[in-house]
Length: 142
Image (tube, rainbow, N blue to C red; front, side, top):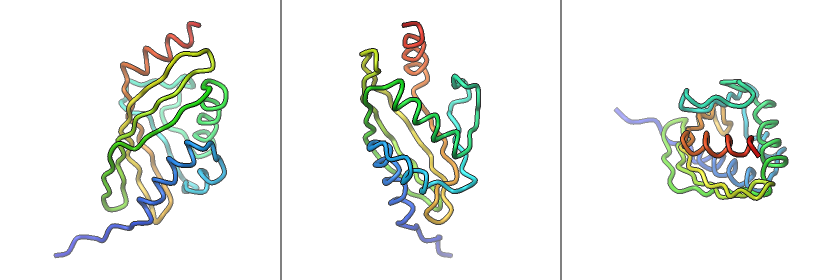
């Protein structure tokens, strides 16, 4: 019995996603997302400011644009490790940045991307919940 073949275009799509995110290239990033794309923060204890546990393509891009154009002066993600399975890619990422108010930002993520062909259908974004809660709580208090 043979295992299904891994599709290198999927790993390329996920790497391109990170590249477009770092370059703030919204249209090319959106083109990588399936029309039925869904994003979800993990773990369940993370409650996004908008209260949405799951968001579609347009809402996801909107959240990215707000955070990266309004909240942060700059931010960059770096791929630490990657695991490619059948129709899925898992990335361990770190980020470094600065809020517009001058607060340094450095978070860590495990992101699971589900794909159909070379389109990303789901993104489960696991964040350092302790760090995120403290950072954004302090940012809101400024």
